[in-house]
Image (cartoon, rainbow, N blue to C red; front, side, top):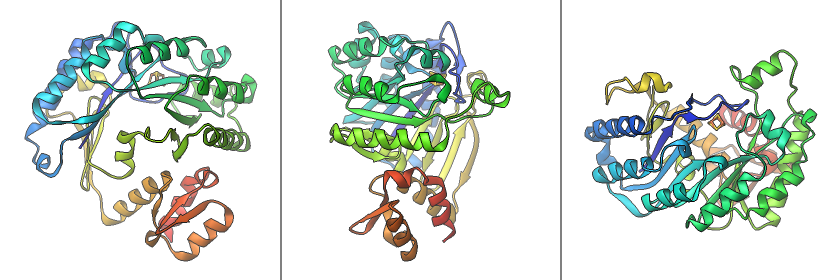
Length: 366
Ligand code: SF4
């Protein structure tokens, strides 16, 4: 079993972000902690608990979990452990923004059991950070990493965004070098996408911003892949690379369709073929009766299960069983340099990952 806790609070909305967040100057940590634990308590009577094992990973995502006060993560983990066994070697991840990280906060997280931190760096270029509406400056990631390492966080991931507009003049290679110089154990790479109802979406609509073209996005992605491999990382999923032994166990649970429970506004859950998701907004979630946070649910049909297994499997380097794909399609992909076969598995290459959606559509219709 895997647990996700969505912490919706952010200091400011980033220009590209369409996540379920609540911008707050004063974060209501105690109210949030109490409300999430009420959802946790109410969910203890769910019949599916008998189908799942101990909790192997816990992930505090957001939003910005590092915006919560020092006591909150410990209180949440204590409440979780009071009700369900958490594996002794569980991976417990917290997403943090560089400007929030202080030695005192790191000490509180480590005491609570957090052993992995994912740091939202995105870029080191001052004009890019400003354009993204990020709160931190170019020097804060290094200070945050030093505090995290000194505080005993032995598993550190860094997020970077590639394919920002040409007009920003961003030097991708220089940004990438600075990220590697932080000596992270794991690196997540996200291509900038334009979502409606975001500041970036509005800038693009009125012609004030122009997304990078596909060829530059591909060039930056493939360059990152080559440099990660040269630096000893394994690019094990379309957006993720880790040193050996440092792949994200929590995310691997999603990609291998293991059961997971999401707590907090907008959190999604999956057990067997059942999927359900909570109300999106904190303002609605906070007043919902505990146990009645769910906004929708569905049971996957066998066709949907196959599609989900294809899409999630092809995201990973280990891919899917060759028996899930027609032989002529596999050969076509291999000839084009988009896939490779290892034993009975077929996985996409980085060139294949660049066209992941199209290849999944092709496979689903085959
Ligand atoms: S910090 Fe993360 S969740 Fe918050 S607005 Fe920025 S990208 Fe979105």
